[in-house]
Length: 291
Image (cartoon, rainbow, N blue to C red):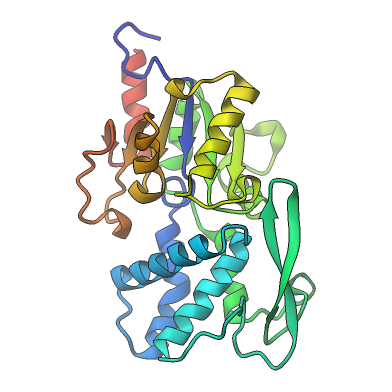
């Protein structure tokens, strides 16, 4: 790398996926806006995203080993109950209008997926075998339709020439595999780039900002690639989930302060070593530093 290159010390970039690479706010808002509209409550983007984020954060803290699709279904059920001024039935994972049927919930552990509890649903006990999903189930399975930001793929192509690319995400393995195809492409023989590793909440058995997630990533970066912590740059949009925890560990950070992101409102970015408006801007800065 060029002399004086500020990025020359880094061997790997660790990305949050949803919010940094994938426009998760657009995906969530399009899915949840009708629910808010039907209730007659405010349905602007800021209101919806903040309501979603509050419930999601609480549920991830309460159920650290529950798979993300089940977390999402429970988020929907909780929001629906709150919007209707009803109490959320305890233990409901997907459709709280239960008529006695149940579904086995799944938990993620480092050893794989385990069945952990039964929860009431209103459609079918086996989501995989039905084409009729409840609204909560449909929301839970909408993540693979959430699209990358326009700059994401070109930026990742550029950055892949200089660093190992790692995803560290509050997600399950099945879902992230589908999201990867949106960015890498469907044909393994003709990929413009590929992620070198993907670490999920299902792998770590915890959700960010719990320290177990970052512990898991740093451990595997060292074991699998020989990369030490001081050669890793945390690259993310979320201050709460990624930037602040990484800084607390003594890591360097790059905050991708996406324009108009609700989750970035009122944040100065002073916690991050680098601040970019888009991942494309970061890739451009890296290319200039290497010129």
